[in-house]
Image (cartoon, rainbow over all chains, first blue to last red; front, side, top):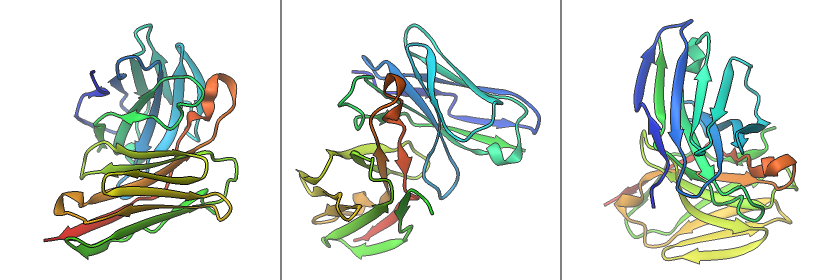
Amino acid sequence: ETGVTQSPTHLIKTRGQQVTLRCSSQSGHNTVSWYQQALGQGPQFIFQYYREEENGRGNFPPRFSGLQFPNYSSELNVNALELDDSALYLCASRIGASGRLGEQFFGPGTRLTVL
Amino acid sequence: QKEVEQDPGPLSVPEGAIVSLNCTYSNSAFQYFMWYRQYSRKGPELLMYTYSSGNKEDGRFTAQVDKSSKYISLFIRDSQPSDSATYLCAMSKPGGRYNQGGKLIFGQGTELSVKP
């Protein structure tokens, strides 16, 4: 069974640029969520995708957007990067059925640095 | 007030000690309670998952949930240096369109160091 994978591992951008991060969900998982983790903090929920639709969003501005593809992989796009966007971006996947909400598995993350 | 509170530590214990990690929460709608372990600069790893109240044991790890007190705990017996990591509690509630209740609310994380 393949776990959650993310790419790239590290990324350095400058303020105002745009970035795309990618995630492949664990085999059989059809729901993908994205989280932002600042240094020394717990992860913060950005949004969730199920059946290629966004169906839950945290307190993040519209310049954070995403996609889910038919194979359940996902992208996180961030426009107009700001210094505060520097963080570890985590993708988590699960089976989108009731009763399985606790079984969410995370990828290794993409560390984004904005200069 | 944050929905989930967790003492950030750091917590330092000698090898073999029993470790107790705790979180409190304010939202009584939470029904799923998780503990994740995160090594430095890595993604969180799911350790334990409990639905509603009660205890769950897995090897050296025991998770407890007390919904009446809105308090959850993770106990690590016979702690090892390899247990040194940040431990994150997380909670979720069901409901919403397409189970968007799967959103996890995390504590800040407790940094644990187990000294040989």
